[in-house]
Image 1 (cartoon, helix red, strand yellow):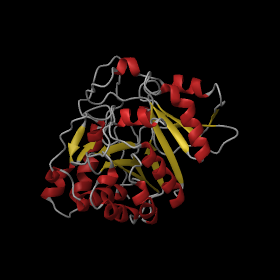
Image 2: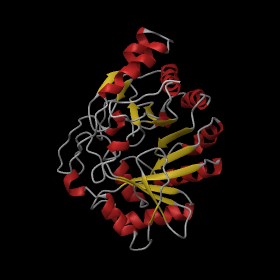
Image 3: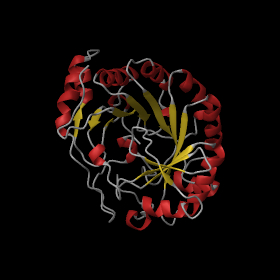
Image 4: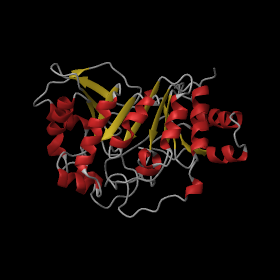
Length: 329
């Protein structure tokens, strides 16, 4: 089996595939309140997304994460999950979701071979949760988390984006919730993708070191060598099975070990989250319908475009104009 290796000798083992730019939330750090979404014919079909997933596994990728927008609002998402779950060579199959649709989908996702879930949760205060998501219902998300636990996923992790002055006073509450539910939680530094009007990124930036310091006022953290195959750096607490992760694109750059690429819902292969280096897979797919070899060759050829690192800043400048829902969460 051939492998994907970039010009810096990094082996690509992990692909994040966005299945839609649409979402039932409008989170303030992810998209504008009034969004114009892609025409449906510009978005890869279920069959095309399945072909992309198969191509990557045949090129040595072992981990696939489905993202959005919100992947569970995509029509026929269960068909796609079935197709990917059956792929040979796939060791880790997971999804990032806002959790609002999990009561409906959790059981079928698990039965189709999905092993893990990341669920976004930035606040445990119903009013604040509504402010941050603009449309979200906290009770529905909490119920979705419980549904995921009932479905028997191997691991469930919460993702919390911490914004200074908006939800940094809930860090310990979020840790306590994860401990009570016996699930993991990762704290994420906000990424400067797209122009947002709700807040100043410079003023709301909260580093992983600041978050960790707050947690350690109550729970001493023990460094862990565990690795989920992604960018989280994990810590343990002596009295809990829950893991605490930190994703730090600003303060602790993780580019040297980056093993990831992203495919947007319109078929652009993004070689780096923080750069515009990309190539068009949709064109190859639609010029060669159903053929996997031209697609695999295009992916191989694209590895030379993967840059050594991104250069995010915390001064409020937007380096990337696309929103996170376009990138794939």
